[in-house]
Image (cartoon, rainbow, N blue to C red; front, side):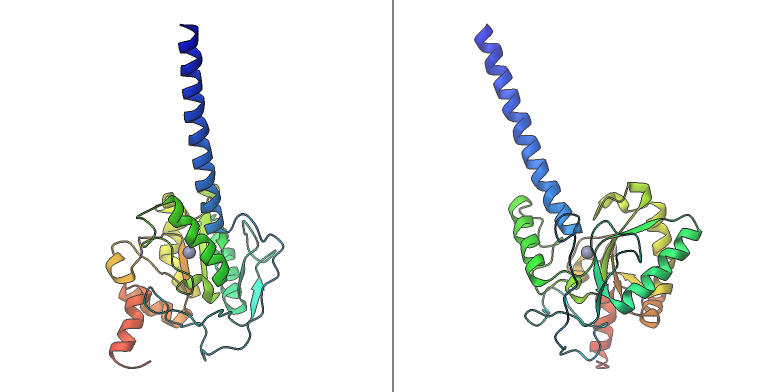
Length: 243
Ligand SMILES: [Zn+2]
């Protein structure tokens, strides 16, 4: 009887150990995706000249990739400029609008934070590989392959809010007061949701309420008014051969 209890205790312990190890790993990768761990003292890399005349409106998706080792120009650290949960680099123009948006939101008691900004090809590659390892089958619609991520543009950020204790890249951000405020107001500052609800077939990605891309105020206004995704906006230009 005593042996049986020890055996049960052992089995239960192994079960809990396995559970915590796997959930720790999952949290670790999630945090990397949001950029919470690592590169705390990151100095933003310098862009080495660009093939893009306009680095704001660069079309990248599952099919369209960025040039190898693309680093946008004028990446600046958001530290002390806006609330962040780690070191975040974005293009200077993006930071200025972001700061304006956060300050206006705060006047309405909406407290936002950035959990991720620019990601190099190497960082994205690390995230992608680890995400594959622990989320088989779900990767393709959630995490972009290296050179296919909007985060490499330096124009794209992941946002969170006080009401969910600044958890990053969280599905539960959907419907929070910060989420609702952003959906009404982000476009006024040049930001749009890249992967809206119900557009997976068009964007290639699951709905991500936290993932915003800066496209400039005029483009954002059009995208908001037409109620379309960034992908559809690019496609409309391609179809009319304006780009
Ligand atoms: Zn994102």
